[in-house]
Length: 170
Image (cartoon, rainbow, N blue to C red; front, side):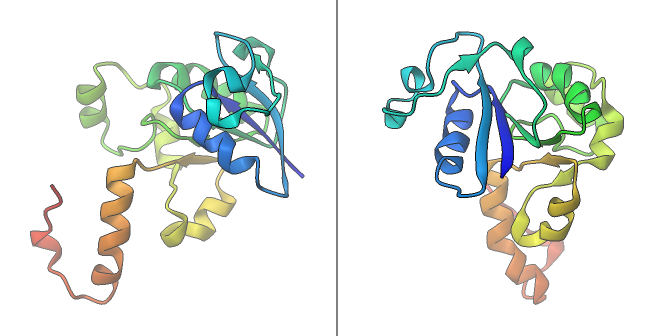
């Protein structure tokens, strides 16, 4: 069994990650965090009957994989501790998506204090980077818009059916 914890489980992305993982036969939910406490079903009515408590982030214990469904600043606070414990991290947010530091800092209006991890992070489109994702200790999960664009364009690019200089996705 793979022990998975979700930081930010009370939010939409954390709840969706949990909903999917609950049906996975090889996953055990290690913990779910939220600063609000309570039960997961209190925040996600679609998970009615799922009796899993929400713990404070300070109470997490080691696990195999941690899914971060947190705001960027919160992700940057916890990521090094998790990686140093040997936990593999999947970031559902934007902390490790952009590879240009100046662009990242301009967009998010803050300094990225773990920029060295951006180089290590694997962009998590398993359909295109499955081997790298399987080996990675830090996965930068793409957003929905970019995933749709990349997956839609990938076969065209692979088969050289589109001019790379003239792609516009809007």
